[in-house]
Length: 218
Image (cartoon, rainbow, N blue to C red; front, side, top):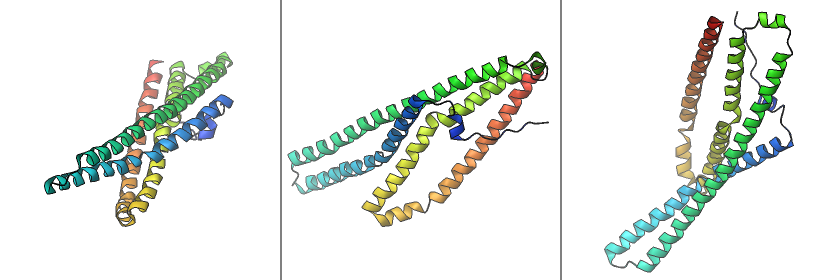
C-alpha cells in the first residue's frame, strides 16, 4: 500500500530557523522584490536609446544633426542602462545568496534531526524500515525542500514584482497598449499551470521508481 504524506507549508520548513535565518530571509525577499521592480525600467531606458537613434537618423538625413547633442543623449541613456544593470546584478546576487544560505542552513538542521531520530529507534524498528528506503526518503525530501526554499523561490518573487511593476509602468506610459497586452495573460498562466502539472507528475513517477529500486536492493 502506498503511503501518502501531506505537503509541508513554507512556515513548517522553517521550523528550525533562528534569528539569523529570519534576517537573511527578510533581506533576500526585499532584494528580490527590488530586483523584480526595477527590471522593467530597462525597457524604458532602451526606449530612450531607440528614440535617440531614430531622431539622430532623421536629423542626419535632413542635414541638421547636432553630433554633440546626439552623443550627449546617447551617453546619458547608456550610463543609466549600465548603472541599472550593475544595481540589478548586485541586488540579485545578495538576494540569491541570502536565500541559498537560509536553504542550506535549514537542510543541515533537518538532516541532523532526521539522523538523530533514526539513531534513537529500537532495533525492531529497522526490521520494518529498509535502510535504502530511508536513505532515498531523506535525499528525496531534501531535494524537494531545496526546490521550495532555494533560488526558485527568489525567481518567483522577482517575477511577481516585475509583473506588478511592469503593469504600473505600462499604464503610466500607455494604458491602451497595456490593456491589449494583458489579454494574453490568462493564456500564459494556463500554459504555465499545465507545464507545472506535467512536471509534478514526472517527478512523482521518478520518485516511485527510485523507491522501488531501493526496496529491490534490500
